[in-house]
Image (cartoon, rainbow, N blue to C red; front, side):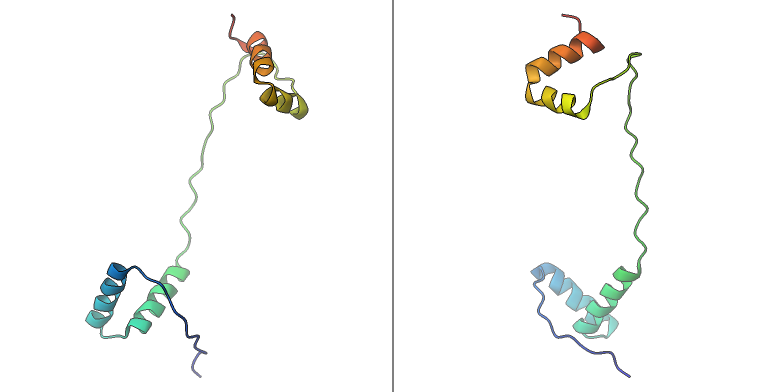
Length: 93
């Protein structure tokens, strides 16, 4: 029993369309069949494994005891936040 067919319109880059049409002709299939096969192959591929991203952190040797609310306030009041962080975590003025 044949599969149901869905008629559609695709907007395809002209150069890509010409390459696909030529490849279909070289394989002796219609452009429709070539596109169906290409889509099927792409959909059957397993996704590439995601590369793990490692973020490096550094220990100042002192605890970082700020609540999320305090950090938000520091972000809003940049001068206050920088002065407080500098005085507690390194940058001596």
